[in-house]
Image (cartoon, rainbow, N blue to C red; front, side):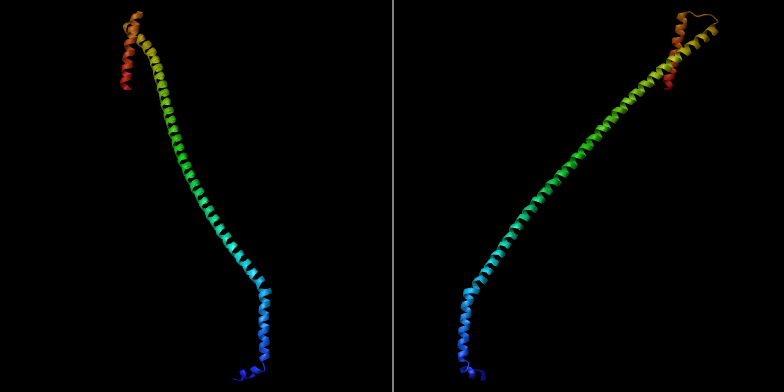
Length: 171
């Protein structure tokens, strides 16, 4: 091989190449590698710290999420309770209003019955007056004589009783 034939010419060059390479390695090991290694270690520590921070943030986020879900659940339960209480309150108000309305209706019915009874009594009194006057007048004309007060009263009472009985039968 022709490349290896020239080895004798380049022997001194090979020697100095090896010496230069070793010298370069020593210089690099003394001056370049320590800052590079320090920078790599600093980067490794920074990455480890960032990973740890991310894990801490994730743990905190998970805790906040659990807290939020718990608060949301509590708020939902409170809302459900409030809705139930409002429904019960509405039902109570409805029942109270219904009972008050029924009481007012019964009161109005009683008042109306009293008014009807009072009107009926007034009408019956007026009818008694007219009937008694009519009866006395009719009786005097029929009998062509004057009646005593006792006779008048007896005739009035009998007539009124007959009219009241016939009105009650019709009612």
